[in-house]
Length: 226
Image (cartoon, rainbow, N blue to C red; front, side, top):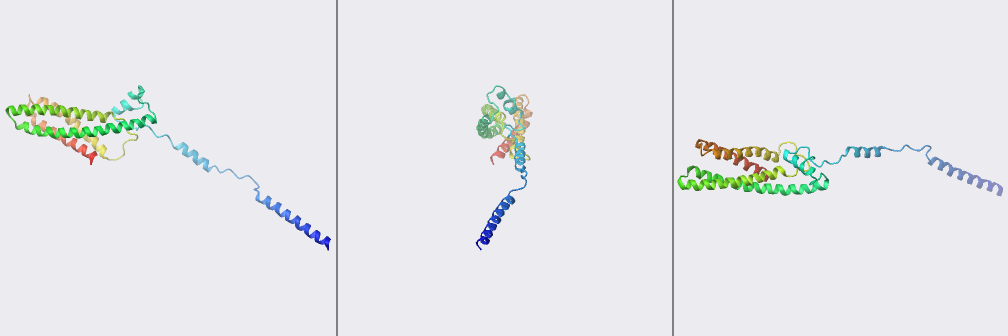
């Protein structure tokens, strides 16, 4: 009886050990699984497709390119090297210059209004009143030319933005298109002003050009203000 009991326990022990060994063997894979490279491929694709952000916009006006372009004067002289740190400083300079540009625009607009009032009175004035009004008209014209020129230079020489202009019609593009109109009008108005003394018949033309210039200038400022 004891011998039978001993044999029974021994058989159970052998069966238990075998079961554990077979379970362990089954739990181990027969082959090494293939390495999943999808994550690595994805990261590689992202690194390949993600290029460094350009420091300058693709399109710049000729004056900006002359000063701030990749081969511009300030780059060549190493005054403003084309680096991320330098571009960050340039954007601050750009903001300051454009704020000054906007202030100068309002000052020039006020000068246009004053010039229009003086010009209207000048056409009907006679004698000493005409002489005095003409003197003030010429002085105001000089102030307008100075503020207009300064405002224009601030706009043309400001560092370029970090990105190019948005596609489609925008108020900034309207501002630029009207700038062509009022710049042409400013030149024509000054030329005609010097021709009126010898050619009085040009007065209506001078007035029409002056009003057109004022209108284009006023709308260009309103486009960015409102």
